[in-house]
Length: 67
Image (cartoon, rainbow, N blue to C red; front, side):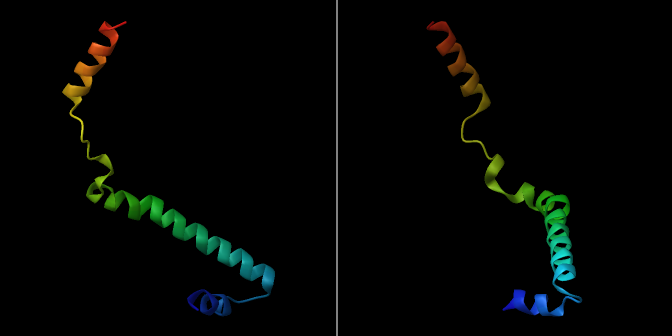
């Protein structure tokens, strides 16, 4: 229902409405990638490692030594 209300609020004929809607979508995507996602990235768990770098370093030496 919200999208229908936005669509009805857009001015002009169908072609103009489609262009305005595309610009609005591009603005929302740009806002998310340029402002929102960088602001919330430090709070997301994607960069939390479960393997310590020193343990990874030792395991690669063990694998290379076995060759």
